[in-house]
Image (cartoon, rainbow, N blue to C red; front, side, top):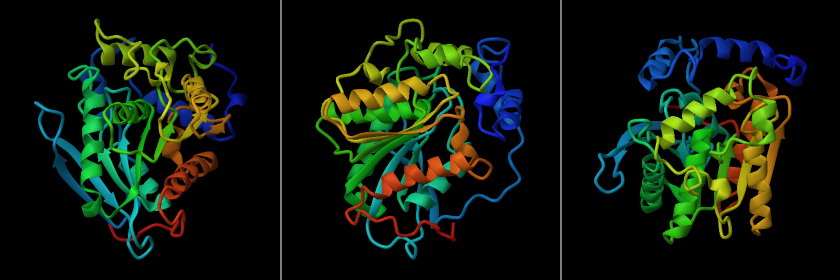
Length: 332
């Protein structure tokens, strides 16, 4: 039995139903990662032009020791709209550590580049189950280290290095911040996390309250964690479940949560734990939204507001502290 649709904001239910119909039945009829990816790839792409930014470049950077080069996509804002040194964001896409890639999140990253004026390094980390924990975390950290070493080339403000991501990517962003603390750098100015998955236990009230009927389900999350951790993985490891880590000394955070998301309480609890550890943290909560809503900023006012909020939080890390070019670029 589906939850009452009145918990969703007006206009959200048709979108949730469309997304659910196109999404693989993970952990049910679909148990193989390859099959899930083929179903996702067969879905038609929206017939819209990608949002324009200053430039977009695909390149490879060094991965963790003993691994192949790591593909990244670098988005630069239009310098006419965003002069001077800008924040640099290392972004990890969502998809349960199994699905999605640079292309599925291209529009979202372009929009984020436009509203923040940041240079964004989007990371094509290795995916599970082929590369299980901690492989994707190490990839995220390797990309963070590369970005820190190349801030001058990227046009980045040396004091405004940001980790960001949505869902599983939010997990990797938080874990890379933990690694940066443990390994003595690089210095991170902000964690920008969008409905992050932060605890393998999946035993929160929101995981039960929103288990079905709001696109992402509890069954999906069980399957995703199984693929990521494998039969011998330790879900209690802080790099797998950052909510269980000692959070002292971590950078400030801006965390987006959605009231109709099984992962809602992960983000809320992370904000509280950071504050208790003495770190500034802000929760941008959208009670009538669902997991994945940020990618619908052209259709949902709440998604546009959330995207703008993330962009403003990133922009404030720049030395000037100003967000002065929100119309974004027009070139790339």
